[in-house]
Image (cartoon, rainbow, N blue to C red; front, side):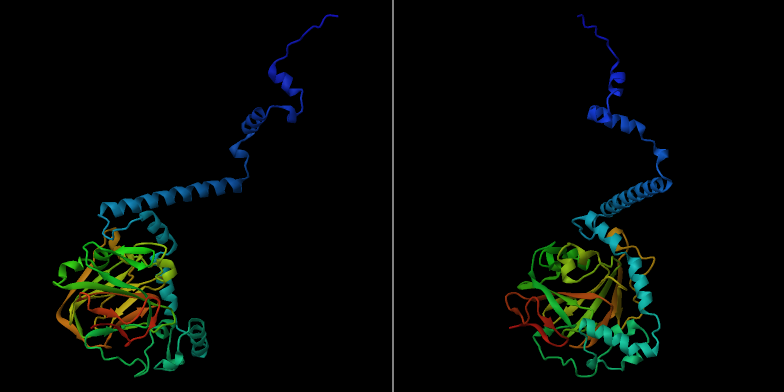
Length: 370
């Protein structure tokens, strides 16, 4: 017998077999060719349009922020602008202004005692120390900035040292003498001291001296007023408009440069042994800092440009230096905060009276010169 072969076109031959027998690559190509954008449901197309717009807009904002930091010379010495931008997105200044407005709302008298007592129970605040009855605080912010009864914070006599200016946890302490130093916020993350203060403190050191620093974190339940740590005088105040990122130790241990970009007030002057800087660092939610002797200080204002993006640093010279005795009132915070002190001490003679992790209250000895 004679076998007669008939040649069919490839496409016709494949069409006679079920789809599972067709080559996989050809099957994928055929499916792709069948795809039509307009055949997608309208909601899916709208979601795709929205998603691509958000991604593109986010990319542009991220790029422009990094460009802005670079153009202005990176005054905060930010090591990772990309990380800082995402933190800005999560904890915007507007969010803190909204929260601040909520905290100023009038609280009905009938709810005050129960509301403030619940807060005190949750965060461990001692309401027995409060000077005024709980139902006298018209808003939550007034309660947060509460005054204490007389003599509940006795000031220890330390003529050659200093006491704690706040109720807080000691999260870091140490010494440095090098210019352009980067010191730790908490173990694992650091920041630039000159960027933080707005000047190089090493330039003011006397021979035989060193610089000491301590970071004091105020938890939500702590007393949030600031007092003078020793006999001192403040000559200059600097207000840095900045971000309002959280300052709790678990957060600042993961990200560097938080202190040098956050809103802060730097008070500079002198004490018995030389140069003195006390810095009030604002935090997420409200971001309010106030001074008892200067009612014109306003923080977290709507139109302020943050200093690390080219905004001006507001500097005020006190023609008559502000002289304070140990324990004298300085100011306070309206929610969340940290106090950082950078000061001059005699080399090898200053000893800390507390350790990292300790809780300390206003008036208790922080350190002294032996």
